[in-house]
Structures are given as C-alpha cells and as structure tokens.
Length: 402
Image 1 (cartoon, rainbow, N blue to C red):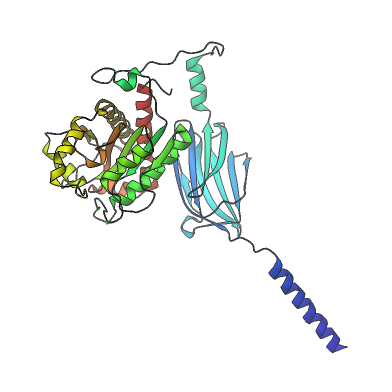
Image 2 (image 1 turned 120 degrees about the horizontal axis):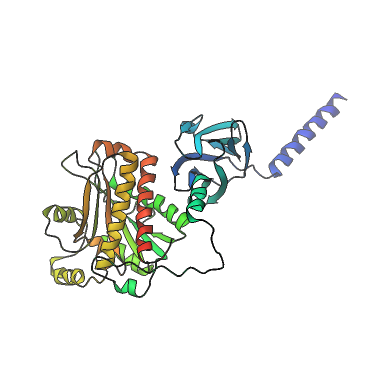
C-alpha cells in the first residue's frame, strides 16, 4: 500500500513538472531605468525610460487631486525607488515613484486643485519610453478670453513670410516650408570633443541633447527628424551634411558644447557658414575642423563652396532665431548667461549643405556651474526646449505654423 502511494506521489510530481515546463515562460519584468520631465507651454511632460513595453492603467483620485499610473510586470531601478520630485508647475505639484508590489510600479502626480484639463499617455519605441502629458486649463482659458469667439466658417488667409535682413530670399518668395530636419550630435567615437574638468564628454552630451530635441520635434511639431549618428560612432565631418542632403532635409542643425580658457565664460554661441575676421571664431573653427581628412590641394574647391553658399541668408536667419530663443529660455530658468552672438564661421560640418545649416554651441563644459547643470536631465531638457522654440520661430518667419 505504501509502495503504491509512493508511486502515486512520484507520478503527480512528474506531471506537475511536465505541465510547468510546457507552460509559456513568464516574461521578465520591465525595468524603469530613468526619467526626465519638463514644463511646456500647455502641459507637463514626464518620460519614463523602460527596458520593454508593459501594460498600464491610470485613474484619478480626489481630496487631494491626484493622477496615478500603475505599470504592471515592472520594477523600478533602485536609485528611483521612493523618489519624490516637487515642481512649481501650473498643474503638477509633486511626482512620486513607488514599487507598489513585486510586479507593479506606481507613478503618482499630486495636482494643483482644479487645474487639470486632460492627460495623454502613450508609448514610443527605439528606445522604449512611456510618455505622460498632463495639460492644464490656464493657458487654454487665457487664449479663449484673448481671442474671443471664433467664426469657424471664415477661412483665415495664410500669413506672409517676413523678410530676412537683406530682403525676401527665394525660399520666402516661393512660400517654402519645413518638413524634415536633420540633427547632428557633434563629434563621436574616437573624437570626444571638449572635456569638462570632471570628465564629461561633449560627444555624449551632444547625442543626448539631439535625442531629446528629436522627441520634442516629433511629438510637438510633427516633423520628420533624422540624426546623423544614433550611437557613439566616429563620423567624418564631410559625411554629416552629405547625410542631410541624402535625406533631403529642409534644415540641418549641428549641436555642440563650448570650452574656454576663461572659466567664468558662459552662454550660447551660434554660427552659420561664412568667412570670419574674428580670431576667436577662427580658433574655434580650427578646433572643430581638426578631424577633417581634406588636403591643402582641395582649398580652392572648399573656398568656392563657401563663396557660392546660396543658403547664406536663411542659415543666418535660422541661427538668429535659435540663438535668441535658446539664450532667452536658459536665462529665464537658470539665470544670467553670456550672449556670445550669432556669427559666420568656416565650419566644415556646414560646408556642402543643400539646406539652411547652423552650428550651436549650447553651453560651456569649462564653466563649473554650466558643467554641473549639464549633468542633469532638467537642464538638458531646457536646452532642447530652447532649440525647439528657435526652430518654430524660424518656421513662423517663413509664414508657416502658428
């Protein structure tokens, strides 16, 4: 009897083992590895960086007003566990992250009473991100009061382009707009660019800024955006504008970070393609062009390309809009910054472009305060937002957008 019972137990164990082995394996939980956030004109945005997409649910609570999001089959990266962030946003007062149980992460937004209009939650791929946009009522009400009733039956005429400093370029005469933008993260691979005192590399920060700007341009502007490099690779200067030409881009923006022997120097400096009598500009051009593989015998051809640069006026206009919007945005949120100007310069990365092209030195790795700020997502998001606003202002000057 005991022997028969033992065989029965053994049979049950074998069957359980076979069923378990045959059942589909549970997928490993997604890990939330990072986040970034920013207050835009009409909404607060939180971006969660995940290792893979997972199901989620959202709900609202009152007294006090809260919006929470539960992400299933997920876990927080240890540095994020129990984190709380406070804001002076028109709608969001506080953000909390918590591992609710072994398989569920809860994200809670404490809201300003009566300010939330709506939320949008969606996934983006490559890399996987979960985006939460919380819109507030204030700006929409103000816009409605300022505008008054709208006659929807009356079609508004298109806005005319405004002239550049030397009049209406052919771009403006023909009423051309912007659909595709190429962003060029400076340096990369064997070329680290500038180094901060603590070892922060220009190539890494530039790539992160380009990725952040790409997200804003795609989600808020609806543009097609292409990066000359998506990873840490060595990319010849001459190939960068060639890639933009192959993509048939409308704009080319090269993102860089500055360095100066004067540690107190801060701010933004923006360039378009031209010759320059300024020794400081030529010194910077020599540094940025150091990785070029061109030879002296090609000088005449190169000089001819600069002289025949038909995008000169539009490039300068684009540089001016980006420069003033970025500098103004950083000053507003982070205090005084040096206005280092909009200048022409013989930068290889701008030569050969078939579209308006600029190079932006967005901050200084050599300045202690800007270096520390550049280590944070908050400051990098602000730079991306300032660049975005400059691009939008340029497009408005073409009579496009609103």
